[in-house]
Image 1 (cartoon, one colour):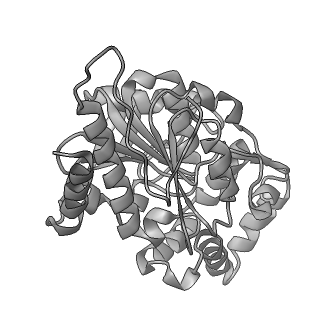
Image 2 (spheres, one colour; image 1 turned 90 degrees about the vertical axis):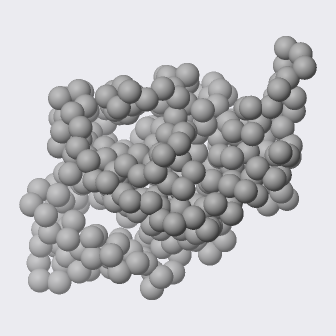
Length: 328
């Protein structure tokens, strides 16, 4: 089977196969009661969500991806139904050890790892600290690739302003206004946001302690001038093939950061979705699923190719819409 045919077959299976059952499960990870979603069978594909999201934020793409993989969407500490972030997993701490502990708890070896936004920064740290645990890395509008961030997120970290925002959010209509602002920031076309997503964002703002927890986590990620942790100078050490997906109209983290990352990653491909904001997997789930599944199929096909010498044969180039790093 040729590489192109393998990719085509994978894409067709994503589009045509029946949906998979998604199980909402719990497991103890380093003493932390942890929520994760589990669907499908095959090579394990682990999904890490972003700030103020949870494992449920991937549900628009899990059924399609589960047609070719065992999909595991993890709720990081302090998110979803996972216990609050404390101690070694408190806001501002490196969560890469938590992710590898999750893999160990499930008895997983190598996985394909996907991280969105702040979850992308976690995924990058896994790739840097435990590269042998990964077959591939996918960064979706990832944090950690540049200082620039939406000024509203940076302002929320200023002492006093974050607390004022919490008080305003608890006034009549305040939670609704916060939800509307969040949706407007996250989507290129806010009216395209799924109703379930909007309802969850509204409910999230009304959960006891959630706003305080969110502000604490935001201050661990950002300061008044932008992102706290930028790892561009460490990307040359990433040894696994990396797919970078971004929305061209991302109002949270600018799409230019995708190119900055690709220029430094040894083996990278960039796919920028036009007319898309900070949540490609929610705003364009069909394209996202097809793009990711096709790329994963290509990586498997390349990995399985027989070699005739000590070095593997070169990979095929992507389409004109893709961009590969020219560096060796």
